[in-house]
Amino acid sequence: MSKGQSGRRSADRGPRWLVLQASALLESVATANYACYGRTGVPHYPAAAPSKPSQNGTTLCVELTVSDAQGTVRLACLDLDLKNLEHSERQVAWSGYDPARHLQVLWVWDFFRIQSHVALRAAVPPKGEVLDATWQGTLDAMRATAPGDQIRFEVRSACGDIHQVHTVEHKAAEWKPK
Image 1: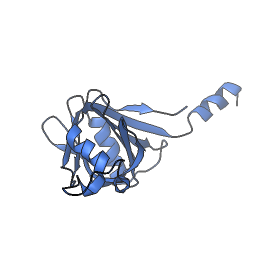
Image 2 (image 1 turned 30 degrees about the horizontal axis):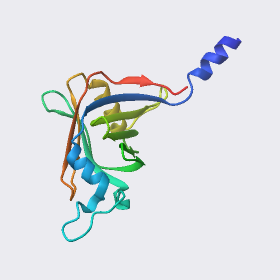
Image 3 (image 1 turned 60 degrees about the vertical axis):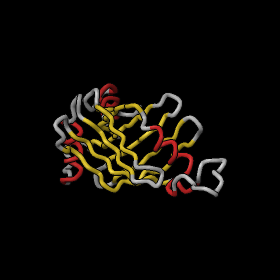
């Protein structure tokens, strides 16, 4: 085997991901309330408002759907737990992983820019690996997603339900970390 072939073969190894991203205007009232007060909601009179973010908001349970422009659901995660990665005055970042779908979800609430950003990342298996129906369905749904489709997050909260819609501008792209 020549040196060039060896380098090419090692470059084929390692994880590959199918990535779908979108941004939208942030539903700022409900997300800000959740970021400040957590799942228990806005305190009512006569309780004093906490001076720092609540610690009980470290897990966010969401319904995530990806649907086409006509509303047909391509992908649904109806009980996905997102963990709090970062919490500052300017932004809150949430991350979760669905092992059955091999799907990582990152959702960022950017209060400074009043933006919501989402990235869905599904593991692409090595060539020749046989996939189960759930994993294959996730990859098929992400590959079928097109500009104009929507990624929706629904969160039930005492702070006010969050209904965040992101319109997809670009098809999913394959990505491999260096």
